[in-house]
Structure formats: structure tokens, C-alpha cells
Length: 331
Image 1 (cartoon, rainbow, N blue to C red):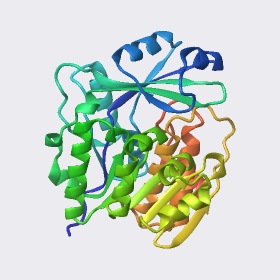
Image 2 (cartoon, rainbow, N blue to C red):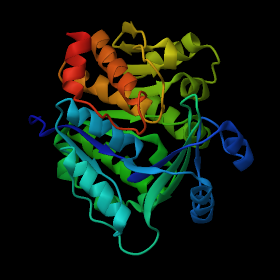
Image 3 (cartoon, rainbow, N blue to C red):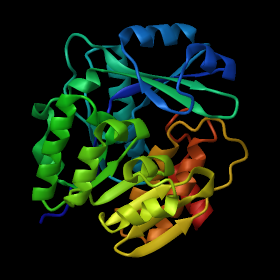
């Protein structure tokens, strides 16, 4: 097996986040799934956008956010995702490359436009996401650079993108390529509703030993295993994946790797401004340690630091020098 050219290559939604503050009443008025992520169509996206107050646009997408953090922490990263040949597609492409991530998937001509996620943030910092996948749901297997995938130590896949048929086929093919090259496959479940729709697929991949690193939060773990108790859920999965990483919000996170268990408390934050991207950046911090062979507890601690940074401001991507921040917090 050759030495990997990249530390991590990810396949995910190419999405531009549109973020606005709002009060709790607007969430109720619009009938939104508070604190969750809901897929919306073109008309719904327009209605929600019209209902927003002053908004800011920041490139997002779960796996893309994770790569942004991982790249800032020193990993060599590449991204595969579908944008349209439009203004938001150009914004997304620029932002990825400006973060040091290789992104060369050709834009798609015509409709639908580049995906966007309309995010309403309430005063407690909770984010309610409404995602129009747009061009992202038409990522074909033909767009995969298989040599690129085989050259990465870790293939990181986003559960959100499992919903549309074409990207799902592309990700299945990417898994085959990565495993044939002796690389590791990391998978983030993304959201409980994704597991509701595709849990049988995910459980089969776990049982078949296809997933090397599984990222879940406590709610996703409960949905995946059917166990309301966190520890029971951990016990149901831990022996089936080489590395399990499970986050618990303010209660911290645990990881179990090859029988070893580590835990970390959440990093204190003066004020939670916006929880968008918290799980994405936790994964970035964890992978930045894991890819370099650091101890399990330190990998978790890195994740806690990066997650705390991103919830202290608006937007899903870090705004400080993450390397310096990790060095300051962890030594």
C-alpha cells in the first residue's frame, strides 16, 4: 500500500449556508423543525428565504465544513461535491480552495442551482436548518476521481448525501475504491431523520465491517440502535466498528477504538451563539489527531476545542487560527 497523498478526502453536499437570527415565534409561525434539519424544495426554499431577516452567506455543507477545520489543523484534504455553474457555485468553489482544500469536481450546467441551507438561529444559539440540496443531489459516480480516492488515508462520507440516488451510488463506489486501496472509511450519520430513512443501509454497512470510523451524536445513536439509554447504544455499536465517536453536546463525548475507551468534557464557552457546524468541527478536530496517530483522548480533546470555537460565533467554519487555539488549550 502506497503512502497516502491526502490525509482525508470527503464526499458531501456542496451547500452555501444562509444564516439569520430570529425569535422563537418565527420558528413556530413557519412550522419549522426546531433544532433539526429538514429538506426543502425550490418553492419552500424561496418562502423561507423571504421570511428571513438580514442574512449572511457562508459556504457550508457538513463534510465540507469538516474538511475546512481539518485543513486549518494541518491535514491535506480534498473534496468531491456537485455545484451548479452559477454564482453560489463559484462562491463555494472559491471558499474551499481558499481554505487549502483541493476541489476539482466540474460544475453542472443548468438547473437546479447550487444547494443552499437556510438556517434560523434563535437567541439560545440553537440552529434550525432547512436544506435545498440543489445540484448536490445530482453528483454522479462518473464525477469520482478514483485515483484521488485511493490516494487518501481516510474517505469521509456524509450521511446527508445518502438520500438522493445518484450520490448514494457514487458513495458506494467510493467505498469500494477506498477499501480496495486499503484505506479507512469514516462515516457521519448526520441527522436522526437520515437514519429513519436509511437506517437499514447504515446498519448493514456496520454489520458488514465497511465503516472504520463512525461519528454520531447521542440522538443519532439512539435512532440507529433503538436504545434510548446512551450507554446501551454505545454497547450495541462499539464492537462492530473499529472506532466509534459519540458526542453528547454539553456533556462531552466518548470514543471507543479497538476496545480502548476515552472520554472528554465539553470545552467551556462564554456564550453559545450558533451551534451550526458543532458536530462537523468536532469531527475535524478528532480526525486531525487520528490521522497523525495521536492518543484517543487527545483526538477527542482536539474535537472539543474546535467544536467550542465554532459555536462561539455565527457560521459553521472556524474563524481563528485553529492550530494556535489547540496548542493554547491542550499544550
